[in-house]
Length: 232
Image (tube, rainbow, N blue to C red):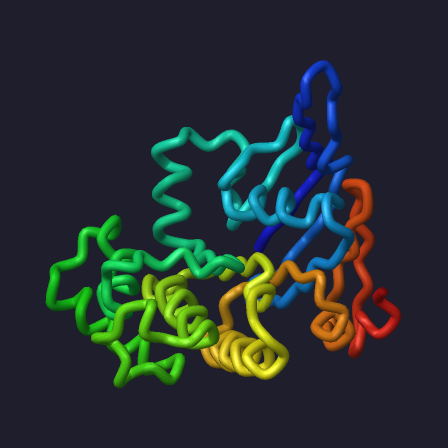
């Protein structure tokens, strides 16, 4: 479970102080699904970085399963990210000189697994996103939707408790968007990981059963079927 309390993040921009998050309180249950929507510059990605331990708040706590990521020593925080949190980004972030199989295996290297187990788990993960026969292909030989599915496999191959997706369909057309979201939602239902999705896409937000709207660093949460029905 995530429990965020009073999370504030300020940046310096020259002589000016910019507040990206302003006293955010938020709870995300284990196995829950939360969609975060808001305008560009409103704090969506900053909030996701806090959840992933990629940045630390200026004030407040970000507690994951009883551990405050905001105060954790860097070495332990790196280990938490490696073991518990999977990330999917808009830009895929695949290594162009590695095959799909090798890209997925890279997520397992920090865990110290033997090469045979890395290969087996990577092949299984690619199969789970419908790319079992594409493991030997380089990213440049795959479509955008296929590349994002490789990135999803890479995020989930370590069997994390949390999957954080930052605009995962932002570089895709409508048909590929729907394909990737179907894969993500199917894997969430199957594996029951905690799933947090950041999007500017109102179509996705309207389908959310739990929607966090963030504007000027402040968060409001709407719950229930079709929570995003009124999102703009």
